[in-house]
Amino acid sequence: MEDKKNSSGLKIALGIAIVLFLGTAFYTMNLYKKSNDDKKELVAQKQLVMNDLNAMAKQYDEAISENDVANNNLIEARARIQGLIDSLSISETNVKSLWRYKQKYVSLQKEMDAILAQNDSLRIENSYLATSLDSTRVRLEQRTVFTDSLLVQNNALAEVVENASILNTLDLKGSGVIERTSGKVIPTERARRADKIRVCFTVAKNTLVQAGDQELYVQVIGPDNNTLGLNEQVQFGQEIINYSIISKFNYEVANLNICEFVALNEGEDFEKGRYVVKVYNTKNLVSTTEFTLK
Image 1 (cartoon, rainbow, N blue to C red):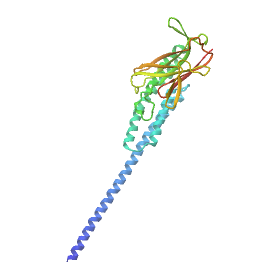
Image 2: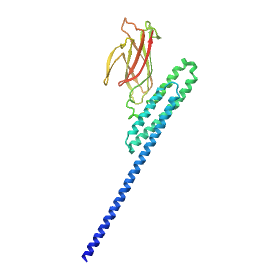
Image 3: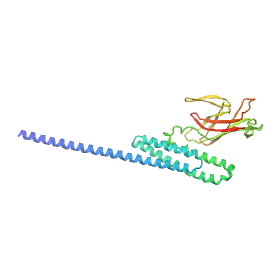
Image 4: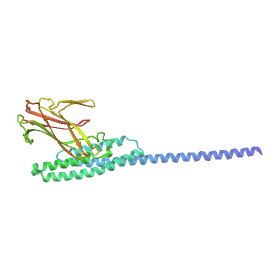
């Protein structure tokens, strides 16, 4: 009798063990299936974001191809899109990462709409005013500055664009000038008549740069390959440059037009030939141009 009871107990215990085993196996299989389903959903969502970014890049490509002259603003924006695509392609597929990229995409979509709309407006206006180039140059430059300012306001790409929080310059121009005693300056292409070199540029609005005192380094290199002006040195990382003048100004988070003048030592005259002008911020070269004195 006792053996029967023991046998029955073993059977019951074995049955319970089997039920627990089957329950655990079923739960594990469901958990594994859910994990796989979640992973597939994240991969699908990541691909959707990638598709949206590629579509955005294609729109920039089309806008760039429609311009007779390369628009640096569109090219730079296209490069930033590619940077985000590259970053997304190698990122981990998880909810946090995917949400971050979706947020960046939404912000970038709004910026692109504004840039492309402005670009269309510029193309139409440029075509209409082509017959009066002198009167339209200032208006076209103002439009270009506005388009560039839209580009640098993109906070969402701070991770991808490492240099977003630095000052950039637009429309850099250099020329020789005659300086009257009244203070008035007159442009000249004649080396023997030039009293100074005038360097003008626009500091582009960047909401990531704190308002206050800022400075840029201006370098003017003469035909003899020597740096004019102060000809003093400053080091940026591993690079050392000779600068002609430090442009110091109060930045108010808005586009700012600046002109600086570089003079020779007393008794010296400007040489005939090609002059190269470069502007550096605290990290790297931001713009360059050249002009010739005859």
